[in-house]
Image 1 (tube, rainbow, N blue to C red):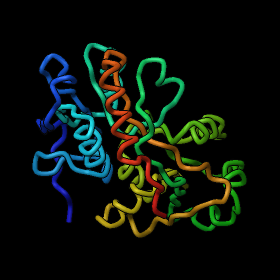
Image 2: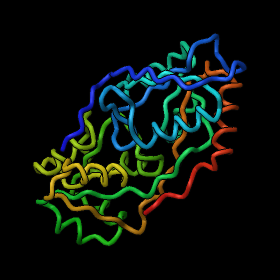
Image 3: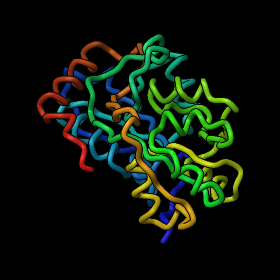
Length: 252
């Protein structure tokens, strides 16, 4: 059964705030992506693993928050514009992002990515015993979601690919459909994404999922905030993360 999601929905969820962190009596805006199972909108309400975690952290920090779904590119543009206090959950801490954003302590820890394989190239991909061997095969083409990060190490490997990967400004599930249609041979996918999409019938049964011993370790995810977000807010978020004992070890 498909989950009903409304893009760009304003959830308007307010948590109780302590007066000392009341940012001019306005709640902190939290922009989240449509990226189940981490964050999405259902019945006009924000849902997902990162949403629940953010609720816990911000409640423990005593920070009022207004949650709003937004496209990835809008989130990044707003953070770069730095016009107001603003945060977004679930981001990798990368040097290029630190140039325009502030990061909380890590809130969660990913497992290594999986490699999804298209039906026409399953045998050729499975013949490789390592990621290094797969990436060195010029007869196989990778597909990637353009505009996102797979983590610094994978991003660097992707940039070095020959032939260059197929880059598409689509969601991960749309990219799996392109893979199933034979437009590329393999792609990387977050394990939580894969499990959720498989449970909800969004990944074709024609696709296979592989792991390699030399896949980079999963990265930690942080709250990424505009530089205009006050020091007191960032300190309260970090204190709440410590109090809640985050990040917890990922479950395979």
